[in-house]
Amino acid sequence: KNEVEQSPQNLTAQEGEFITINCSYSVGISALHWLQQHPGGGIVSLFMLSSGKKKHGRLIATINIQEKHSSLHITASHPRDSAVYICAVRGKGGTSYGKLTFGQGTILTVHP
Amino acid sequence: NAGVTQTPKFRVLKTGQSMTLLCAQDMNHEYMYWYRQDPGMGLRLIHYSVGEGTTAKGEVPDGYNVSRLKKQNFLLGLESAAPSQTSVYFCASTARENIQYFGAGTRLSVL
Image (cartoon, rainbow over all chains, first blue to last red; front, side, top):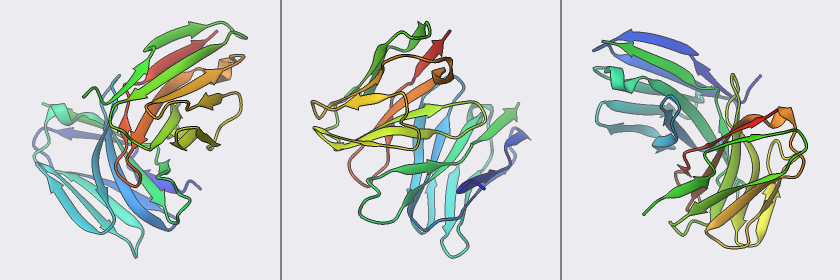
């Protein structure tokens, strides 16, 4: 079993829909990251969170440490949101050195 | 600021050839990482560095070597390329326990 599991693996939506991507992890963490990768493109960090909720524009990320679960929400989705969304966790301890363990990614396609 | 710059962007090698991928960052970050990304798998850590002159093995280090002679540069070497090393390679850097900044990636094919 992977340490970081994302669901769904693929997601198709119509423009304007509310989207949720889930991430579950099995290890103790010091932080969780959400990243975005456009087709053929680089990887951009969206959020880093260790508790509660963060919001940036139409994107909202939440985390429940007790349940080892995080969600990424996109409100009023748009075709330009089409990308791969990646969840990654940073372990605890002084020797983690910022290293991340990544989920397999969720491929999101938003149709006009 | 250019951020994290990777060169080259594309490369085709024959089995047994060698090459070096260069990662340069201009953000004065301490930590740097090399990852590979393969279809159906998450990003996997090859090697990382926590400072100039230091390197350490990640999850999939076999067949690769690295060097960090200068703080801003992190080099990934393939001494004898194999088809299993066909992948997209990403470099990233961070200021300790912060978000990671990624390069644009290097697409490598080994024939």
